Length: 256
Image (cartoon, rainbow, N blue to C red; front, side, top):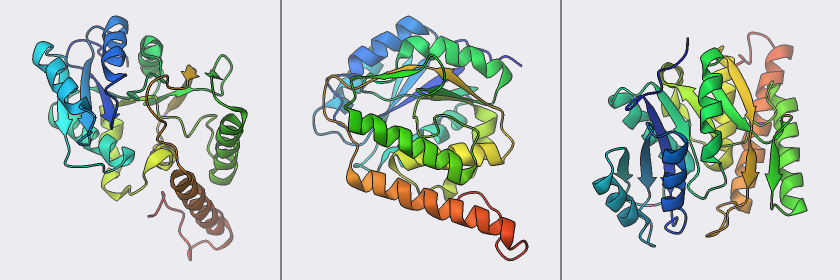
């Protein structure tokens, strides 16, 4: 079943915190690539004026919407808020996209096309044809190791479980218990990808070129990496214990 890609059917959720230098360009590129797509900017009270810029764009373009939040509450909760906003308004397809330009909007048509045979499509850096540009060697090594570790420990059939450029059917999002997802940062992406696979979702990966942001500062931090490592390890240990102790340690989706 091919999703309808018409006005009002596709919502691109774009979390922001201090992205005034890049948001406008991302919205321009998005609507050049998929003119009918709507965008929801979820702004966490950015002190640099990102929210005001988003409001100005929304005032002049009915395809742009803004959800203001009281403060910086994290990437995971921003996406969950966006998913809920989309569900309330009946969007058929929901997209995750960063505001810093690292996720190429020009690849969105390919991701949407792949949804014809999938419930979730990941924009992947690590399938043939995918690549990363302008990252230092240590950052690329950390990302590759994180994906290999996640793939092995959680037995996930995905090459890029930590990536944040994805397209999902609204009915898949409705089936997943996002009210139980407490993960933040990049761990949020692993968390719900694992839940989707465990729920029987059809998942496809489409190659993208990920480019390091040219404006602003990366949100990556040691605490984000530490959270991801700790949570993935805990989930994987529980999952493997379920094989050895059936009935005593039930195999479950990620537990907070």
